[in-house]
Length: 124
Length: 112
Image (cartoon, rainbow over all chains, first blue to last red; front, side):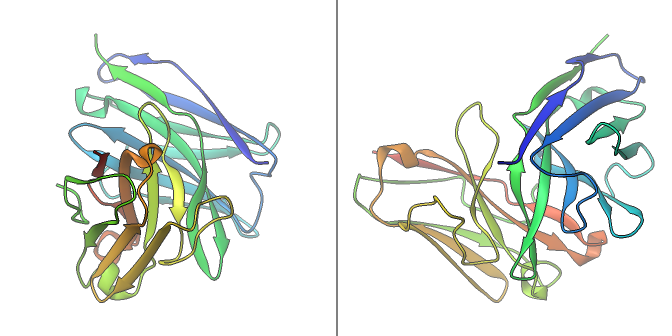
């Protein structure tokens, strides 16, 4: 079955870049019927979708309005994984970060597989 | 403040039926976007419970059902089990946010 394995540091200094990676097993990052997402969860903001990368003969990205300009989600086809980079972080970016696969059925896209989550604290 | 509105909590005795509402607007649920539901146990990632408004993935018990009408959706749990105690989230999309994925604030279900 499809599994997502997250990795990355749990502590980032203010103004620096948060970087996380999500390794995919059981599927391909280049799957033309899937999209690869990052979502975060904090007590103050609840569940917040950050963005996605997906391949449809070429690579596309969609980013949440709330983080556009600070976020990059990149696929790595050689390692079958995708990454999140969030620049200029502040304490407001402290959250549990999840990666997730959007699959499609019945013409609908939905997040059917999630990583376990990485707790990231922004602190000096 | 979440884009989709859910009650903070509902409760019921084992065997009872509870429902959770998810209220949106014409820019999201009312625009025809699908609603999905997730169950989150403490310390775990959300788990897909219902997709495309009414459909259960394989392995989800049939005591979970959902519906959607207009700008609202609802999740029903019939015959509450103790292991159903969790937080439940609805999710849709919003066209005022360029089609961003949006979530409800979550509803804590307590089994009395």
